[in-house]
Image (cartoon, rainbow, N blue to C red; front, side):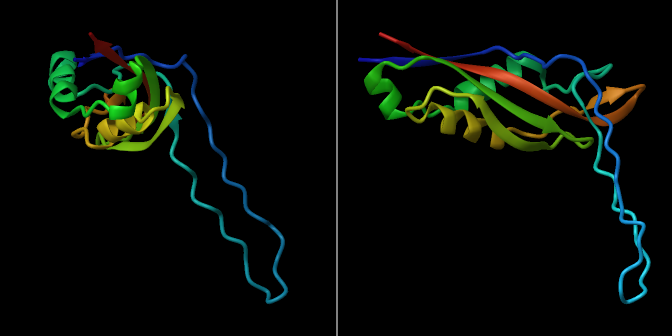
Length: 147
């Protein structure tokens, strides 16, 4: 009989700031209209003074994952274990945006890791100089079967 357990290791990408510039066509159209500037995309930081965190800390995060995990049958049948790396952005309110698999394992583990990230409660947002900002975050979720 196979039992499953889950171990979590949180990681962060290298420090780098992103600057976004909006460009607009300065020429006039045939109808004589004027050009308007595009709204600037929000800046997403890869490092912050205070990084985003799961409410309640690492222990609460591990408890959340243990209570919500559904280890895929295909992975259990094959004895598949390993890390699924997920990246996402934590916005200024703590919402998780655009989760994606950076490095997966297959056999349903990628989909399960994404499902877990999508159902997480709002995080505590990252901050720079005390102000909430969008921060990109990458974390490996480790799936391990025990015999």
